[in-house]
Image 1 (tube, rainbow, N blue to C red):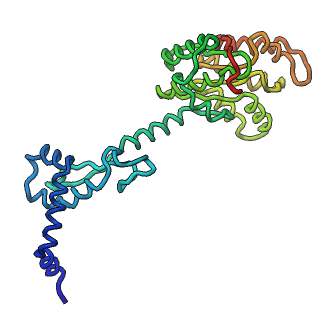
Image 2 (tube, rainbow, N blue to C red; image 1 turned 135 degrees about the vertical axis):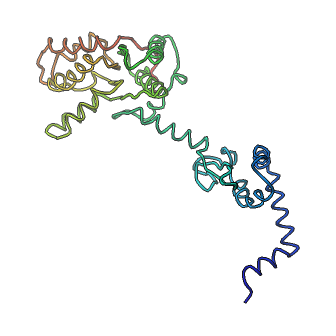
Length: 309
């Protein structure tokens, strides 16, 4: 039986094999990336090192660099999805190291961005809002301008009032909150958007559960809190005073930015908060809640056509 070394030697002397080898070698060494690499490292490379490194050079040219030949991250053609090959020299040998490609970096940044925006019961499309896709018209100009100024000037060590956006259905109040949350995320600032009616329903159903205080703490300690559609809920004395009141009191004492949206202006919201589900009139307790809201947020009317139609 012929030894492997003899077989390789015999094949190496075969004319067709030699031609194919030379063509492949020429293809590898004529690759623009390889030529640049050899030129940049001409003081470290010699012909022997280059010949020994042909396998690595071929592995390199067979893959996409900087996403050029990949339609998407999910359709990456490289050996390691999302990683681009880079030629290096190690111990006088040509080698490859893999680094994150631009699409991989963007994907990870997007996931970090999403983690900075938390939400409870808020539609996903709201979380895609940005200032650039907000329609600026007369009815929303003041609110959007205030929102941009807040994002521009926000600092965790600096006390800033939030917004109390009120107005008719469908004028884009919640969408403005989503844009603020996204712009803050670009600056690595975490925020939480909460749809108040659903949150209070969950809190009422969680009475007696061990995690009730954890749920309340999540809301009251958010770096930037956005309470969406306050006033749309059916308020009990307990949810008003022990839940909403506790959250607002904490944020007022800690000077944490808080935003609101509502169909009620300040006066109408106070009227709404005055009467409990049982029809009890509790004007003083309602006034106490309103005092906290007014401390935390500036009231701005948002008008315009119903964009939900």
